[in-house]
Image 1 (cartoon, rainbow, N blue to C red):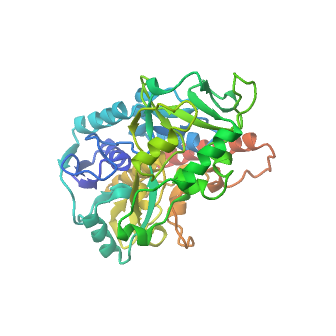
Image 2: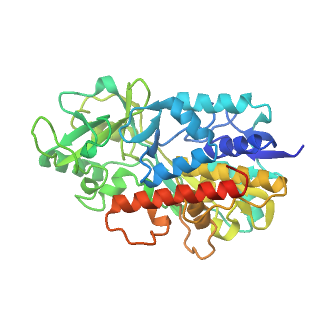
Image 3: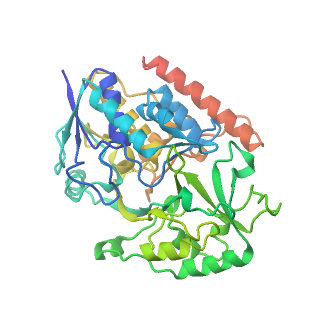
Length: 438
């Protein structure tokens, strides 16, 4: 029986192992936890969610909703477990992190074809293997990958948002609502008036950030999709008011008017005892976070259950290194999956794991790779990370801009996205049927 080594038990690694096992391939899943943790990971379970508990929008006509539906069509373990661990989050799919991790861990460990081996992997294994070690790949393995690929690896920073206790929020100053009343009113909204906002912004831009190591200072590069709130605020007095604090689609029931700005809090766990501050990824020192974020209306006496943190992420130069099936061009017995390939986000990482695992299983069975259509989201992401014409490669999350426009121009954006989404689902269904994966 063929045996594949999968390195990393995050979202991508677990999906890759699951896809292989579903196709009769024995897997040795190597994970360094609990013997060693990255600076951002703390829980011993697999598929630990770090920055947020949200898996983004559920609407099919959204990029994230479409991607999740495509993942379900491919037998995603992430989607199965997320459905069981879901918490209320309006129109988004958010999960209880611990329950989600426990469900994934249980499924992986109970599979008879998957053997879990604990301990850090410091060298690149001989193929067949899948490297799914994520954006916090250890220094030793990062060096081994860079040496093997013949080029240096890239690095950037992203940040995690703070979490506060529900009981410590002053509910007299906030209100529950979803923007434009889409979905249930699951978000806590903290409304600013003009004077409150200007005072908050002033303190935010002058707050003290945590120091970086000398190496990090030299290579510091912030990814736009996970911009620290204080960095974004320094771009202008109204930047965050038109970004994560935008009041559009909200109306304060106490005043009957739209706030000047509004901070949203999203449920973190199934019991609703913890809420994270949406869009407030940060690298501020912990005392500064307490001081400045306590200026948010309703959070004056907030109990911070976790402060925001910033950490270094690494990813390979995929357009130069990978084929569209996520195999290494210089050695097609080695595959990469997840955020180390430059797909950005939880579901994108999981989707890459599904594709890598499925394609390696097909290769071992002497079959061609998945014929992923360019007009489905998974196919578009695979095409992007393997496109040699992409020069200044940066991480990419799912978005409708990756997909071809409809043949007939549709002015209404929602209808256009609905058309694109249904076309993607139909194309993927036909492709899976044609290759025996339906």
